[in-house]
Length: 451
Ligand SMILES: [Zn+2]
Image 1 (tube, rainbow, N blue to C red):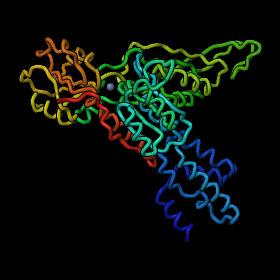
Image 2 (image 1 turned 90 degrees about the horizontal axis):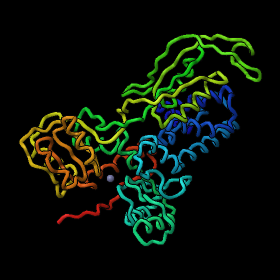
Image 3 (image 1 turned 45 degrees about the vertical axis):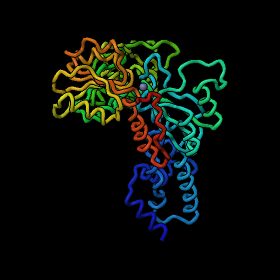
Image 4 (image 1 turned 180 degrees about the vertical axis):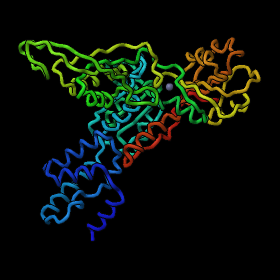
């Protein structure tokens, strides 16, 4: 009866891992005792949502006519797997956030990443905020959550003592005292595809989104030479390690066949050829592109899979800008709007109490450039790219001068512009860790009030 019920669940939820595990068990490629390790490995490799695992059917049901003894052993291991799947370590959540917004994308002045705490702990819940304040930490404590994810880093400087003399130090003490991990995704999330500015653009219904100021000096070209027979294996390993992405295309490479030569000296272990003799091998010259920050893992992948003892490879710095990462966003409204209608929409969307702008010139608004927070530095670029309006959180008095004819400027407040960043965290966590409790803070951390 029970088995029939499980079988029904199994049939309605076909899972690749289950099929794989079943095959491995039935072929006796793995002992049952190693099951959970393999399962954990698969989960790590695929970053599968925990919820799916919670409903994984027991592998044993695919095996016909097994003894009670084996059935009970498998049931035991299956339960172990289930328990393991419900344990979400904070470091898993942190690494999911960093896959979305890699830390190397942060600006030089920034201090994004782990701020306080030990990430080996099991996550009891995540509270999402723009700024870490004592009130936010109190909220996390009341909820019983031990992870606070913020956009703005709590810590920007080194401390020689922590005595609680200002709110930052009091937050540090409170977080440590209550075993709360504090994590911040700041300019790495500003610069990431799908990050802070994309969320703002989504709220305004913009289309055809592009990065306003794509990152410079952020790409490398890798060229390596591989025996023809191993070329596809090496190519695939490089793609898996992060090579070959151009725009919305992946697996991009260029391959041309030629002849490689070498002579192995005494003490070497050549993959082909004979020691002391000049050898000629048919090789593929394989070219591909990668973000510079992934160089170490790509090199590791190349060395792991390349058959040669001393593979030849070159990393070249590229002058190309990286269109998939950088500051600000530019996009278009589907229909042009009047300046006044558009500003009213912005005010409503971002719940702006006081929207500051320059003189209205009667232009139509269709092309919109924006940058959350203090983004006025992008104004010249927005003008050069022909935007009708530039929206940001902060613009200084003198920066308003002389641009009436160039562009409509809309200053909506730092907090207001970035408040929906919490939704980005929420989406990532909900998708990958559906059984984890997660909430956006109810505390309005905006320190600026209007009267
Ligand atoms: Zn900010």
